[in-house]
Image (cartoon, rainbow, N blue to C red; front, side, top):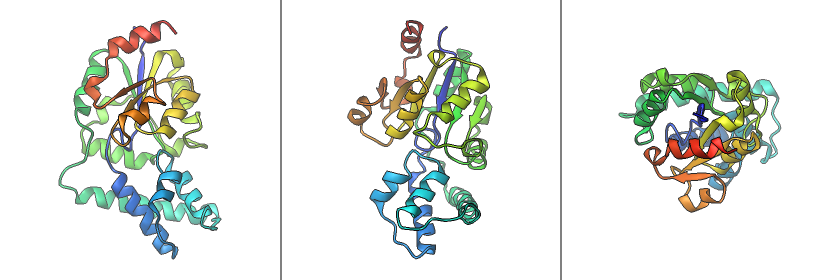
Amino acid sequence: MSLKAVFLDFSGVIIDDEAIDRSLVADILLQENLRADDDEYINYCRGRSDRAGLKDILANRGRILPDEYLDRLLASKKQAYRQEIDLLDELPLSPHLGEFLSQLKAENITVGLVTGTPKSEVEYILQKAELAQFFDIIVAEDDLEQSKPEPEPYLLALSRLNLQPSNCLAIEDNPIGIESAKRAKIQVVGIANLYPLHMLQRKANWTVDDFLEIELDRVDRVLSKT
């Protein structure tokens, strides 16, 4: 089989947590005596690492913060994120995620998570959702110098697994993540959890509404020709 590994993004692909994240960013801006703006959030935060998004959204308001100050803001955001998750009656996981991950394992395909979310948040959610056992590798914000859309997150995952891009598939829900994977020469499935299917079709190699629509055999045939 040519397909050796599948990499999933976290926010928007594993879990629908954007409303929580958007609220936490708004809270931080309020603490800085700034008003949140939805368009600004989409432009600077969606698809990017927590650090890159918060740093740039504040810079856009004329706030150039030292790293130590930004670290404190991000630490408080991590704590608040966990508190918000613990208040939920049920985790807002993507439909059929568990079935898809089980299918990958049955096919002996390595499963990775490539995200700009802090590793502590990722691991907390995976443990809480009883999904941690499916993932062979996690590349998270803590591992990275650069955020998506730079290719570094995916290049690091490839390096750790000693795999070629032509043996891998990425699953992303937004243009920033799709660009990151493509710049690493990895083919991408766009899953329409956040953006309409027609918007992702312009960016991704494949587009689906649901994990169960991903045809692994078809992907494998395409990869075998690359």
